[in-house]
Length: 272
Image (cartoon, rainbow, N blue to C red):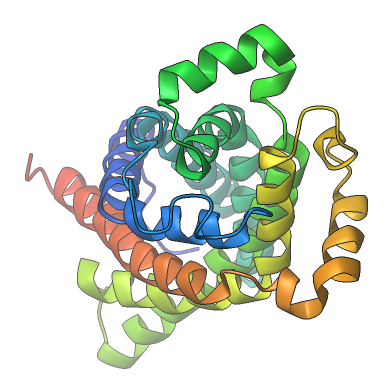
């Protein structure tokens, strides 16, 4: 790996800013995707009304979640650079992205539970959090942790090595490091590709989070939920919301990874 090592503080700040930027700017598309994937259906969940419901919860979780991910990812890359040859770069990137997602999900899942329930109902985020803790306890706010990890790890497993490969190829072609906007385009392509492939896991995660408390789906059995969706709705159910998800994550990948690269380059060049 020939990249310059990214300091912990730079990864922390860059990741936090990037996470907040993308989650706030693309929140309406995420709401539409959640409502399309809900068992109740798009219209019953509110249609296009209240598409910013749950934004507060999402904003609070964006900064720490993205910061934890990028600190882990960059640390793993640094360790790999110190001990392994460049031929192992993709494996190091896959490992860094996977571990980063597992740790970041400790922050993201409670936020995701509150956010998606707010998106699919008419309740406020704080009321949902309080009700969840009262009726289900801490376990309730971590409902869907396993399904979220099983969605995020394969997604990042695909996205980040592809993102690094596209950046490296573009850099080689132009004979110099890529700019932030170029990194963003690479992020859009890699994110959209990974989003389409992992959409069934996203549907399952949404169903588990929104399921009634005592239902079989609410127990968090990913295999059961996957089979149930396929049996009842077929491939159409597994790929429900795929277009807004791909659109959201493609645009989000451009904003997220472009913003991350821009802040990172600025900080490391002493621009702030």
